[in-house]
Image 1 (tube, rainbow, N blue to C red):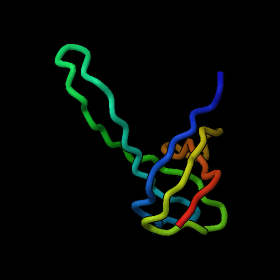
Image 2 (cartoon, one colour; image 1 turned 60 degrees about the vertical axis):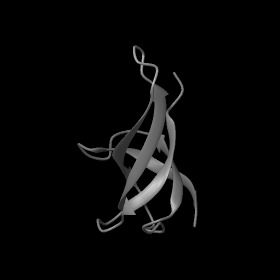
Image 3 (cartoon, rainbow, N blue to C red; image 1 turned 135 degrees about the horizontal axis):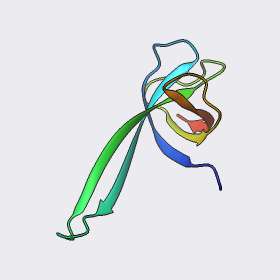
Length: 78
């Protein structure tokens, strides 16, 4: 099974080697057919503390680094 790749914006970089990424997705409600927007924050591993708040990044699923950290950064741009 392929690993998930998500794209989002860094909302917090206060923790050491960890960033919080806000990922937004849109989908159509199955019954009402309205487009619904949902947001979720993911904790991602950032080994070099390179990314700051407001950066756009891509994260990929990986082995668990901790209870809540199961993604790592693969690329980003300011």
